[in-house]
Length: 245
Ligand SMILES: NC(=O)c1ccc[n+]([C@@H]2O[C@H](COP(=O)([O-])OP(=O)(O)OC[C@H]3O[C@@H](n4cnc5c(N)ncnc54)[C@H](O)[C@@H]3O)[C@@H](O)[C@H]2O)c1
Image (cartoon, rainbow, N blue to C red; front, top):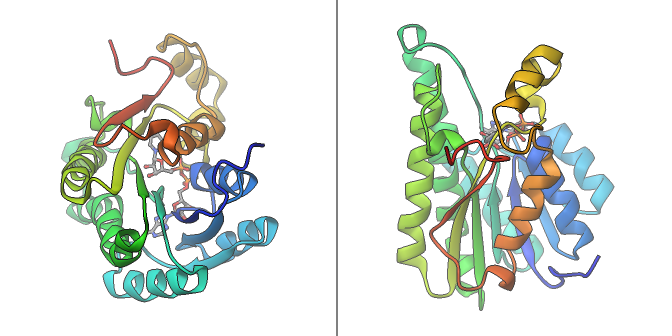
């Protein structure tokens, strides 16, 4: 590893599992000091123990809790100059069967969660010489898929939220989204545990495989370093060629 994040202080949400966990592992290997947030406090603590990082149990949709936890995390780290918003939930269900409570919850976690985290971290981000925000959206932000009304709406709004804050917070703070395709995590276990579903999902993309959490972690690293220093307000598909057709 090249210690590309040496000296950086980065807060990762959804760090107990999947992409958030893989991002935490890659960022720790690249020298970052980390605060790991997840509503699964024990899961976040286990990852933190592995990486010598700090863990905080926190529901990103709870604004008051996020305010307290992010402030405590920033004070303990001596600042925050990077955010990864990876916490998210998915409920795939045809619109006719979509419960209003599920719609509300997806917006609260997938959209208002990143708002709460960025808002609470803003004094730290503004105090940093340069800061980065990476929001994990989805190909569902770019194209509709069956049964994803609430999820797609939450992720499209997250991508536009990212563009809008990139405008407002530049030039010292950059903000970008990543739009993953199907990545093998707990969220998609129902799919990749079934060989037939996996083959069908792989067959519809140019690269003929499902994504790994590491595919997304490397994109998050790019957006969190000066390698992407002239890039802000974008959304990068990491989807094997799912969304361009
Ligand atoms: N897996 C995919 O194929 C895929 C594709 C596109 C986008 N995404 C997005 O990527 C992100 C990471 O998902 P993943 O695939 O790693 O899933 P995952 O289920 O493995 O991990 C999600 C993590 O978020 C945490 N979380 C959920 N709600 C939370 C809340 N309210 N507060 C705090 N933490 C919360 C969970 O406890 C879990 O640790 C999500 O935003 C998801 O929507 C996933």
